[in-house]
Image 1: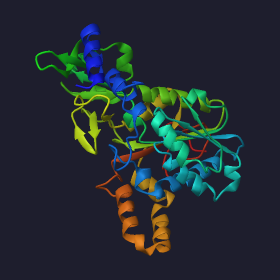
Image 2: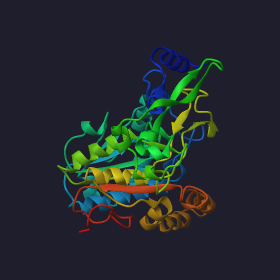
Image 3: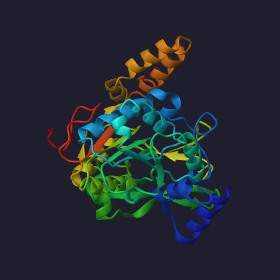
Image 4: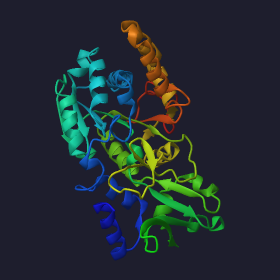
Length: 376
């Protein structure tokens, strides 16, 4: 067993079962033994590959999106361009290269990166060494300077800790929900799932999406309190200064029941208890639930759209054609990259984009409708 697994088992023996969120938090973020603080997990030698690693087109188009957002919010000075979970810094580097098309935008922007991994911070520093704008690192959204903010986050929400709830008696409605926990099976000498004997609190039930009322016995719903905290911070910031927050991640556009927690190691799925601290734990993002929560705190949100639709509206096909014309020998490679980002059997439909923004702005570039506010 790993050192972290030993510690988790010892804690359970001492304090009792822990929530799935607590388990994920320890596995991913423990300062000494957690997954993100101790390694670079990206790329072909890591455990997963994200869209910016696949093609420069992804970040370039987000750079264009950021320029348009700046124009939509009135072209202010002193703009914070923020990325949550910036990986190796490749997406931000591609965004800034595209942003050279708008020198007035770059004249008014400072980049802030929020990254939990010291190893990745070092890589980001090298990637962005020649950045045309100042680059800084902060620990949280609350640590950003006040002012207009454009926030982007690709595959960030899926790695935030989730809680899992199981409906044990649908006729009891909210009182039928019990939390799924992580415990220790002494007979197997292994971590295992269990279900709490007591129903969840009224507050926990209220944090769940409205689809919970349709649950049948043994249905499981996932809730991400950490995502709610992120949107709370975004809302508070947008109360004082204009801005947008763009999230791109994998998950359904409507709330679905089922266990989506998974562990990845070397691009393969493994058991979630197989190697704590050495595997990436993720869960699908419930975009409908994010929209519901945004509505509950009066944060303006768009309806989610597929990554295919979002990138197409930003002009990815045209960008691919331009790159292929400039480098004919790379035409097939660029076509494969385009398919991976937008194809229905690839990332095109599984991944969604969703935007949250300050009041009074038009529908953002790449989206169709605003959920909980009138378009100006």
